[in-house]
Amino acid sequence: MSEWSNGTAVERSWTEVEKWVLVAVLGVEMAMGVVGNCLVLLVKVTCKGHFSCRYWLPFLSLTLSDLGCSLLIISGSLLAMLTGGQRSPWCEVVSLLKFAFVTSSIGSIAILCVQRVLGVASMGSVFFVVIVTACLTSWVSGVVFGSVPVVYTWIRYDPAEMLCAVFWESSYSDLLVYILCAFSICIFLPFLLILLCSLLSAAGCGRGCNSDEEDLSSVTPLLVAFYLLCYTPFAVSELILLGRLDLSPAPYWLRTLSSVMSYLDCGLNPLIYCSNQDFREAGLALLWTNRKSFSDPVLTGITKLDF
Image 1: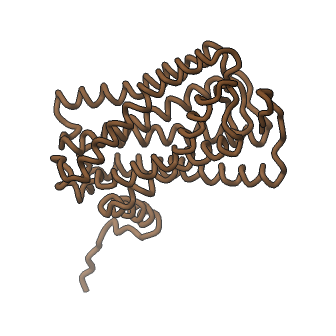
Image 2 (image 1 turned 180 degrees about the horizontal axis):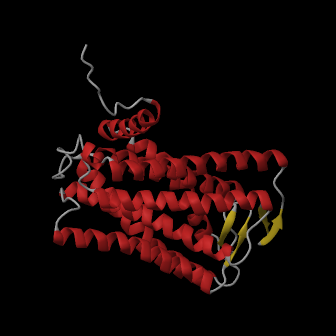
Image 3 (image 1 turned 180 degrees about the vertical axis):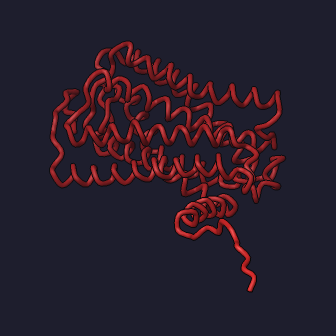
């Protein structure tokens, strides 16, 4: 990890205990994210008639984002902890993809909140095109803003974050312009939509909020609460960076916490989906049916004997 003293980076290695604790935590988070989101996709595809999901498109986008983060970003951090770093070009790819997954996840949740308040389902020619465009915009904007540090070579490996991150070593004005533009468009705007829709839902002003108790969208408040909880350290670390004129990053423990907590959100979302009774029963029915197909004898024919 790296500490800063008088604007100069001073490298310090993880202790063996710290290293293996983080390896264990990352391994558990990766397993939760990959297994959980794969099961969620399987249930959504094979058991979609067994539970109600009016707003399936943002749910699909969020699940793909969580699965991609678990497969590529968390596994990359795990390998970096075991091998001592990340090398180019994987270093730049990880940095770009992480920001894309962050923006797509908060964008998907914002779209889900808006749909739930308006009561507009994901089907229908006009609204379907609008929702698809909004979901794609959240992904594309993340890729665009994530590629800017790569193009300007602002990327290097950060042992504290356990992956390649943006480091500012030239101009505070560049830092200010980039963070304000990226966060205003990709983070702050979706956050405002989430906050506004959450307040409207709490006040009972949404069209679809009162009729969605049995729908999978009933878990939206939990998704919002845990997303804000898990990404608070990330937001705080970026605000600290923005407030330091010497371009020194946030404390290393906070950067490590931001990575661990953001990874945790990818594994928690499948558990949140299971808080919906119909979705949980559909998943259990799928697992039980597959189990019975391998264990129970199958009656293939009956022969009648006359005595």
